[in-house]
Structures are given as C-alpha cells and as structure tokens.
Length: 444
Ligand code: TRP
Image (cartoon, rainbow, N blue to C red; front, top):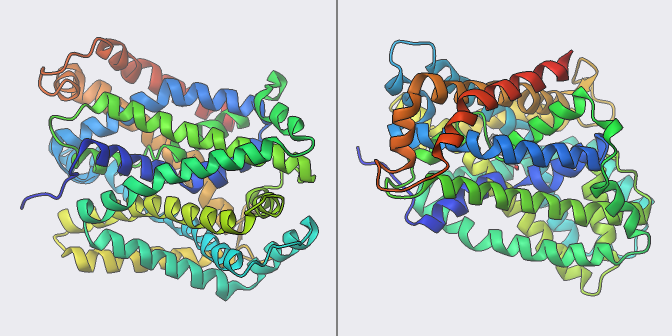
C-alpha cells in the first residue's frame, strides 16, 4: 500500500506547525503563565523549549521517518517482541483524552465567531462580558453542540487525507494568524497601564519558581509542541526522505514559541489594563479579547477574523490528534479510512461530552477536587506527555542508538550536520534526566 505524504518542505513545516500552534498557545499558555508566577514561568518555559523541545521533536521525527509507520507500528518495527509498542498505544489513548477537552474549548471559538458576527460584545463592560461567558457554560447543550460541530469539521479534513486536507489548509492560514496577533499586540501595548502586564510577563521573580511551576512549564512545552504522544512520529512518517529533519524541528519549535509569546503580549497588558486578574484562567482569554476589540477602530471586523483564525488554528491541531487515532485504526486494524475516521470521531465525542458538561457551575462531574475537564487536562499534559516524551528519548538514545539516529538525521550521510553529536548527547543523557528530575520535583 503506498502511503500518503506531504507534498513540499513548506507543507511539512506548515502542517507540523499547524499541529503545534493552537489553543495551547493562545488559550492554555496564558492560563498556565498567569497561574504560575508570570515571568518566572516564561523563563523556565523558554529554557525547556530550547533545551528539550528540539531534541524531543527530532526524536519523534526520526522514529517516524525511519519506519514510515504510525507510532505502534514504528515501535514494533524497530523493536519487535518488546514492550515498546505499548507507548504507541499510550499515545493513541492520550490523543483521545486531549481531543476530549480540547474540542470543548475549540467549540467555544465557534460560539464566539457567532457572537462576533452578531456584534454582541459591542459597548459591553467587563462585568457583562464575564457574566455571559459563565452563563454560556451553564447551557450544556450549546457547548456540546459546538463541540460536535468542531469534531465533525476535524473528521471531514482528516477523511480527505494528508496532502489534500491537512497541508492545503495550514499553509495559508497560519501566517495570517501571526499577522493579526501582531496587530493585537500593538493595540494591547498602547492601552493605559499596559506596562504592568509587560512587567508581569517579562520580569521573572525567581522566588516563584517551585516544583509545580517546573512541571507546569514542562507540560505546557510538550503540549504546545504536540510532543510526547506520537503525533510527530506520525507526521515524521509522512516527511520525505530528502528533507532536513533538524531544520524542520527547529522551525516548528521557533514558530510555536513565537506565537505563544505573542499571545502573552496580547493578553497580559490588556488584562492588567482592564483589571482582569492574571489568574483568571479560562476567562483570561475569552473575556480579555472582546474587551480589546471594543477598544479598537475596526474592532468588529478584527474580532470576527480573530476568532475565525483561532478556530482554524485549533482545527489544524485537532486534525493532528484525530490523525493519530485514524492512522492506527487504518494501519494496525486494517480499517478503511472512512470508517476509521467515523469511529475515531464518535469515540472522541463520547468522552468529550463529559468534559463540556463538567464546566457547568453545578456540575457533579469532578475528580479529586477538579472538574472532569481540568482532570483530563492535568492528566494528559502533566503526566502522560512527560512520561511519553521520557520514553521516546530513552528509546532513541538507548535502543535505536547513535548509528541509526545519525543515518536518519543526515539522510543516510548526504547532509552535513555539525551539531549531531551534541544533539544525540542531549537525547541520550540530558533529556531523560531533566524530564525525570522535573517530574520528581513537581510531584514531591
Ligand atoms: N499543540 C497543540 C496546541 O498547542 C495541541 C495538540 C495537538 C497536542 N496535537 C497534540 C498536544 C499532541 C499534545 C500532543 O494547541
């Protein structure tokens, strides 16, 4: 069976960056940063992305492209008759979990597009906008409806296949998102009291760095880069044999980080200016943004474009999540792509409903003091992804080994890569140790 693949170098970067850039950058990053000490979190986050992001991403690409398989098949090929394929299954399970709560928030972006078109934020003060956000969660069916629409859209693109679907949509819309974020950042920075937000974001207070800040930054880095569960193994398997994996990983990491920091520059100065607490969590993004648009010339149009682009950014991410499940069903269980897509989408919906409904203010869907939504987020980002990433680097460093790794990243010796020794050293020793240490300090 011939495999579908990416058409061009730009296409892969766009698709992998499309997977990486999403609600994680614009919604989750500001929430985590606000709850974990501001500048201190940013500093730890950037260090982690720089030192661990690129090597872990490269490891996933190498596993995927070497084997030309989905994560489970990949581990089976590289290490038959071992327990390693279990991590492939873990990835598939993790995709379901992330998809379940991610599609909830993705659904909100659709509701907010409708609100934006109806000019519903116009002239409202913060209190009203906040109240309406909470009231929206209390209408359970509405959340579930938008979530279902979003999952359907995802399934539609995934069904159309890799080059036709994923690649085509990512290439145009991602750069547009960056552009509009820059415009918003300028508006936000010119609001009264904006400097307070800038200080909160960029001035690290070292006393705030605790174990839980470390684990939050680690989880956020992996979540944002789509690492640790095989999405990038799957995408790596679609990368052409003559493409440069290292520069691809670097470009994806840098673009993802740029978008997150830009989102921070949009959100925090404005939040401080309007008097929204940085710890406001979900409301931080969904309430601050409409307030910014209210203060802008052309805010009506910008608001619509922004939420459309946010929805698209979320879509290119959910596509990558669903694709992991579909690739598994197609290649390991020999299902047709059509049925695999239908089944995967229904499965995500089945878990996702509970995530959406758990945010109603009177919901009893709680685990260990957290809403079901928050527990799915916590369990996937702070536990499954670090564990997954730990074993992925361990696998490349100790099982696959130096020779196979060098062959794959230099395209069988045709590329010169002077840093490959350093990268391999990081993958073999530094990355597993660092991940384990952060994980242990985070949970002690
Ligand atoms: N990285 C995406 C975001 O930031 C979310 C995402 C897509 C993801 N695929 C993933 C997270 C795989 C972890 C693993 O919005």
